[in-house]
Length: 154
Image (cartoon, rainbow, N blue to C red; front, side, top):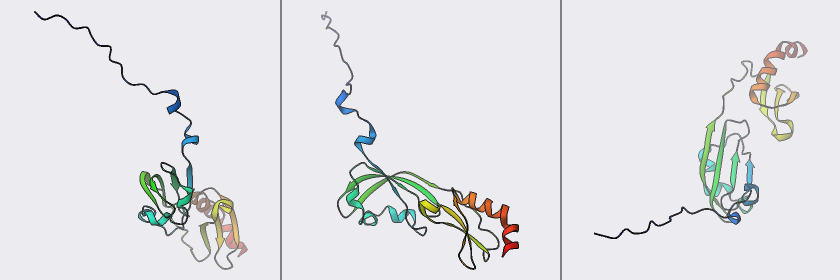
C-alpha cells in the first residue's frame, strides 16, 4: 500500500495593489476628426498618423469621427514612433445616413467643426441660416421644419 500524500495548498495568483491604477493615469484617449472624404481604411495605415504620432504612447486609444459623422472607430495604438502609429481596431461602426434635402440648390447641411457643429447653409450666398445643431439628423429635421419660412424669405 502506498502512503497518502499531503494535499498541496494551491492558490491562484492574485494581482497586487501596485499593478492596478486608474486608466486615466495609464493611457490617453485622443479624438481625431479627419476630413469627410477620409475612409476607414486610410486611418489604419501607420503613415496616416505621421504628423501627430509623437502625441501617442503604446496602448493609447484614438477615437476617430470624420467630419460629417459617416462612421466612428476606436483604435488601440499597438506600436508607434515619431513618424507612425500602428493601430488595432477596437470598434468600428457606420453611423446613420441622412438623406440630403431634395432641393440641394437652395440649402445644404454641413458639419462646420466643434464650435459651429452642424449647420444649415443657404447655397446662393453661403450664409449660415442655422448652426450649432448636434447631429446631421437634427440639422435635416430643422431644415425640413423651417423650409417653408426660409423659401418665403429667399
